[in-house]
Amino acid sequence: MAALTIAAVAANFGRDLDRCVNKTTRIISDARDAGVGLLVLPHAALGGYLSDLAHPDPRALPPPLSEDSAELAKVVQWAGDMVVCLGFTEVAVTGGQAYTYNTAVCFNGSGILGRHRKVHQPLGEREATWPGDRFDAFDTPVGRIGMLIDYDKTFPEAARALALDGAELVACLSAWPASVTDRADRLSADRQSRLFDIYDSARAAENQIVWVSSNQTGSMGGLRFLGQAKVVGPGGDILARTQGKGGMAVTTLDVAAEVARSRRTLSHLRERVPEAYRGTNPVV
Image (cartoon, rainbow, N blue to C red; front, side):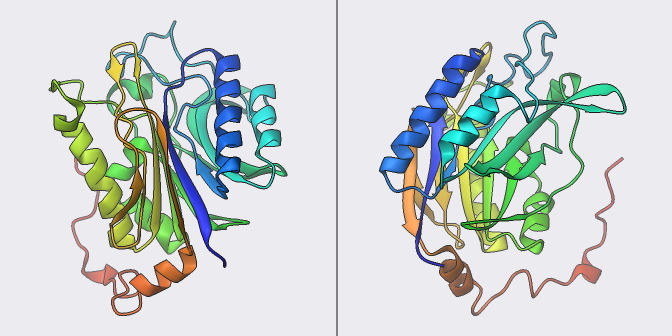
């Protein structure tokens, strides 16, 4: 495959859906002007994230959208040939019961190419949404992709499952805040800021994949988001990044060639020894 221009976005998105849609379409237009083929927007780009992660107020939750909502349909149509990933609070009806999820979708102008429902839920998030239950890669015009949503990347098994399913690109969409228990004066000194960067580089390097990490900026209620969007190469090297403010991290590379080069001598997936990995049952 030819070289692909990839962009990871750091931006703030709130509750106003019309403003979110307009902002998203403007970012897509800017990315198109820059020749971007894969654009990864933050989680909760349509409707914003929770305003309190410990005890979410049921009266102040993000507006839930169905996958066939008018808001998502407009953004999908706007994508054209570009492959775009974004996150939102999804409502889906199963057996007559409505459930809400933290969901990421990947699409181009022809429709939805893949989806992921966040599996790992921190703190009080489980009071607001249901967890997903799987990690699947999927084929797109720019290659085989997997998606994660913020806290999912804390768990090595999540990214590994996608790599084993053939993903050479993983988009990790985040609404990742600074520490809510140990606040630092500067975001660069925040513990969660350091972990956010560590996980991005580690997940890319241990799976020898290209990692595209987006994140919210600004604040929502008591949460202050980190930004720090980036594209990471298969060796864990940061190829492009933003800082704490809004922006777009852009780089161009031949994904298949870079992944193949990183696995030429040492192939982490092929050289695993699963029968030796004991003690991996859930902690009680």
